[in-house]
Image 1 (spheres, rainbow, N blue to C red):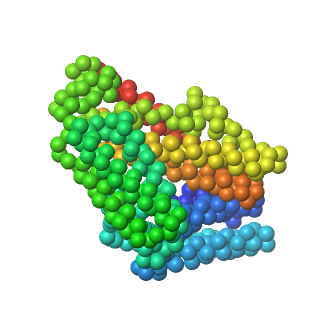
Image 2: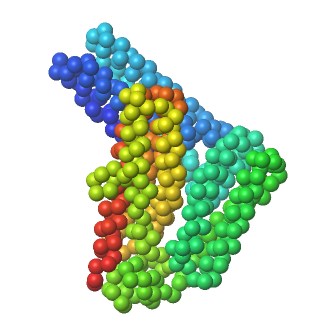
Image 3: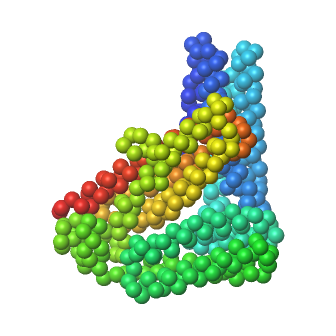
Amino acid sequence: MREQPVESWSGFCEQVELYVRDRTTAEAVLYALEQFHDEIADMHDVFHRERCFRLHDEAILEPAAAVYEAYQALYEFVDCIRDGLETGASDLPELVAEMAVGLETIFELYARLRDHDERSPRHSEAPYVHELLRVGYACLDRKLPWEALRDRLEAFGQLHEGFCSALALDQWRLTAAQTETAGELLEAQTGALRELEAFFEHRDPGAVGPALEAIQASTGGMLALHQAPEGPSLVCCPRCGRDTPRAERYCSCCSAILPSEPGRSLQPWVDVRLEDHGIVATRGELPEHLQSLLGAGEAFVAGVASAEALGALVDGMRSRASAVRRHLALVGSMSKDVPDELSGLLEEAKVAAFEGFEGFQAALEDLGQGAEREDPGMVRHALAELTRAADILQRIDGLAADIRQRLTKPG
């Protein structure tokens, strides 16, 4: 759930203040109001997506219901201000003050819900596994529809593919024994996922519980493996690839800084090039796939392209976004135990990865929905958000280049 200030709020308040002093027009206030309304609607939608499959938990019913009521009150205030701008009403400052109280209430309720989440028992230390198990067991108890499990299963399956790929490419730098153990754990996880997928064909609830338990056990084994004090005796140099004793700070061959945590390397991350997936700009120019998507969106808004053509391009970009998500999962899983020279850059990269991809994915879904509904306004807004998120993601390439330079700089 989002808990930062609403970006468009200050601009809207400023326009109202200027309007009251006859220093701006009603049209300018209305434009700022619509920006605020769109941002609030996005927040409301995100809240609903995150909470709609948790409402069987009685402990969150009261605060969640209060959040929905607070959003409804904000929408009503927005309507009142629209009417007031048309009629020249003088109570706009009072309405804005009440809206401010409503926003504060929403964020206070968000904090209550977050505290409840943190106090609740967890099925796994891994958030994505906890969510899969939480929903799965709720479905078995008939507290949630089975479609909720299908949604979580799809997301977990993509992460599982990323883990299998990382192991196959030796990106975790495990010992031979650790690699064998990890392979067995991932194989057990694969079998459990197949059992869960088969449920939606055969509808045998009896197979769901054991499959969830197998995923919980295999994930626990993976976490224990990565947290084990023993690690590979050698660390791969991120510059020249030479194996160097893990106790060394610099590569004995080329003097590059070595990863400070045994068995991990920053190299898999610095090799990620998002533009290879057609997500971000290359040398200041939009890549072909993103350019085609934005062009189709603009053509649809202008009424010269069909919703079907736009939808097809959205589907194509979704497949590319899934590939990028697997790469960015590596960024998010990087240890904080990195050389001091790189910790700030790595943290910045994590933030950019999270903000950029979450924004990109949300905008892509909005774009797809806009095409399905044939709603030019929704498509126009999604195009702006898509471009903004791509700009954030592009920062990762610059950070990767900076980290590579520092890794390879002779000591």
